[in-house]
Length: 343
Image 1: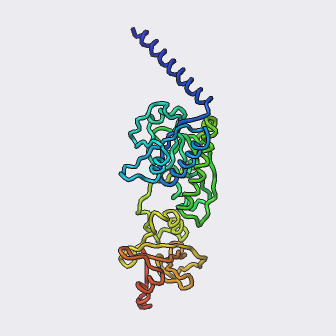
Image 2: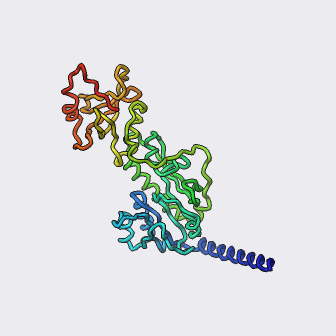
Image 3: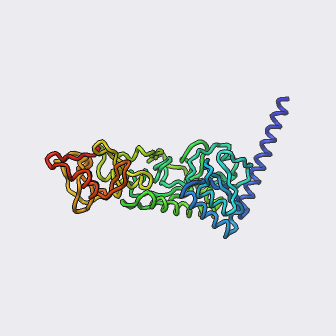
């Protein structure tokens, strides 16, 4: 009896393998694909638009649908786009799709771990756009960490998804991008988004060859970009150089303003910039003063260099110019006791 069961099991496995082979062979021979797109935010929307252009103007994509993790009753931008353009919208994690219903899954700024039972539904697997030069800056906030650490070169990686783990899949393609020392988060995000969309389109146009040529990631140079929260905005003057403070400003621009404490008040700092200045070894770190030549409030950092701010806001009050801050909080303090220090 056990021999019969064993032989039956072998026959079933052979049948399944044969069916899978035949299915994959058909995919290799045909000229169109059914695509399921997983995405959110500005990067995801930009990529979805580019993929949708192919669906509308070429014969490469027959079906394009969207998976969103939005739990709000209000539709986000990517859902509104999908709805307007007659895409089916599926809600994570309740996908209810059949194996082979879609040929390939595309993931852009989705932020959720893909389990093996989802991955196996896609005969060609799943492809992820990641805005860093993997294996550098694996994780949730690669663009922020690129800027925060002052990287002069960043980029975008296209990789295969592996189940149950983030950002370790084989690299399909990469594009290196110079990073200006003044560019901020929104602009670099848009730049990487445009590049990622083009890379994704190129991958689709060269299926399945583009997937077959994927290469394993290097084991060297691995770094991690963990998820951030607003606590990152608190400037540590005793620990950070002026350049490091400015890089933090660029990295979280549009998310959180830099924050410090001044005379027991929380202060938000805006419109940061650096100037070529001398060292000020005779002043304590955190010294806050008005600079007439730049019409800014400047604060002394760990390396004894200043970073300047054009406007500030005491929490609970409106944002004001540097000169108004000086007139309201510094000017009337007598010079002999005027030691204004941020902390």
